[in-house]
Amino acid sequence: MSANIQGIQTDLRAAKLDGWLFYDFRGRDPIAQHILSLPDGMRTRRWYYFVPAKGTPKKLVHKIESESLAALPGETLYYAKQEELHKNLKKVLGRAKKVAMQYSPKNEIPYVAMVDAGTIELVRSAGAKVVSSADLVQKYDACWSAAQLESHLSAGVAIDQIVRGAFAYAAGSVREKKALTEYDLKQWILKEFEAAGLWTEEGPDIAVNAHASDPHYGPTAESAAPIREGDLLLLDVWGKKKTPGSVYYDVTWMGYLGAKVPEKYAKIFKVVREARDKATHLIREQVAAGKPLQGRQVDQAARGVIEKAGYGKYFFHRTGHSIGEKVHGNGANMDGLETNDVRHLIPHTCNSIEPGIYLREFGVRSEVNVYIGEREAQVTGAIQTEILPLLA
Figure 1: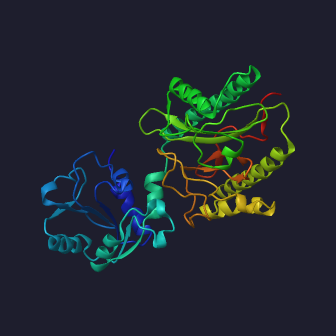
Figure 2: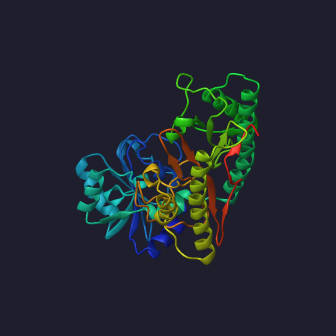
Figure 3: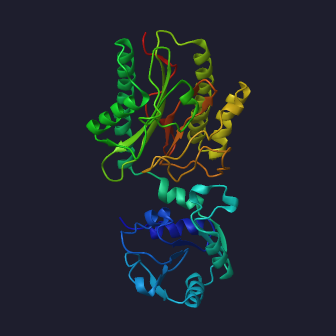
């Protein structure tokens, strides 16, 4: 696969930008490497690659790594001394006055803020205004192919089944009075992953009661709590197929180790469910109508439900994140809290919707994945409507 230079140039002209300047030092910008489809190689010195809105791209590389960008089209300039770097960077930029870089003003969208402040200063000193490449990054780094969507759906079928199996395994252990900890259940799920041809970088998160109040709790053999009758059990499970280019599926489900779910749990889950459904409905509605929708607006919709119910201070993370080849992708996040994500949801991207309420004694979260098509959005897996009474 090669970089889509022609497509990038079309989008640069549409955005009234003079170019997109890619820069990296020691692999600090994986976004640049992915979008440019750079093969593995030795790149220990600073390199620049400029895609102008019109014309031929230009490269600037160190003389001892003269072939470091050989896989990319365009004219190559070289440097060794700092003075050469500064002079040739001006030549690379030419008459460009407004260029995109992996930069975010005031670091509002840190997921794309890969370029250091000093480099931004250097580019500005060469006469160019630097703007954020966040929208471009989303299109060229977060959009899925048809094969990737299929890998997500396939992983989803398997993971939904594994989640159901994990609840049944936990219920069986409680019924038979067999010792089982959060960590034991995590290991059981990972074995099921292996059997199903799934893989995950980390996780899953298995949490009972107060542990579920920590959104990123991950049990270890030392920290894990036992799973017993009367416990509220949260399963946050994410994974993808082992085939190259596959993308993640990421869901959270809740179960109760008893025959009837106590009202204190059911009440909180109902609020979380309403917040989740408010967000997914907004996405489906706006996409179907062809109306623009920002990530922060989705967050506001879900958060408004929880705040109205009086639990606003107990929902202290974003409503959802972009999903890609890594579980946290580089597209728009459903976030107006931690960041101000003004990026619009665009076709062929996917995100999680996962509001939660985290009280001291227990936490509740519900998570689904929403895929954006050309004129419709869909939840890509099973949707939980109530806490499962696992011993019913």
